[in-house]
Length: 213
Image 1 (tube, helix red, strand yellow):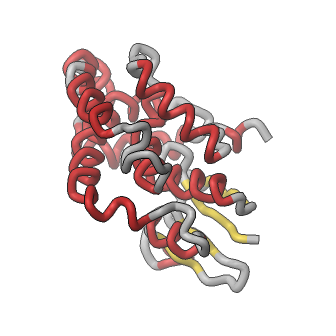
Image 2: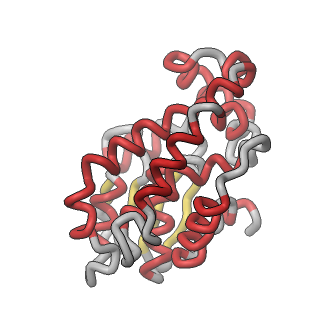
């Protein structure tokens, strides 16, 4: 069985989990503490997740490369995103900033983190974003950035990002947005919520399933 080393909050890790679910491929889940540097360095030489280890013991990272490897029948339709690749990547880059600024101070208090990994995560991320307590005080600023981004996303959905067919683009979008469900003062517009729940159903995704086992 394939093994997946991942962080629960990480959108790139969520991509792979959703991909496994859509394709119906079982995997052995390994949620790593964020301060575990040794395991990813041992497997691939770099502290970056997700990492998949196949049945032959070969490790690889990069979420989209992993998904291309396991998608033998092209169910994820990577071909559909080519005409929209630049716009999709631009949207993901722009939405990541307010999502991370809002959610990182909350993610560290989920079961994914203990005191040591919480301190490691906050110290690392604060270098770019500032102290988490100050991010929390700026929540209104970050919340105001979301409506135009959600309107932009809505304009692309008919009903899926690349048209009538579900594709990897929908997994990429959902993975970047899913962490917002942790933030208590934000509600997705109904169309976006319904879209995300459709992705969840198709991919058999359960955000915190590792904590309920």
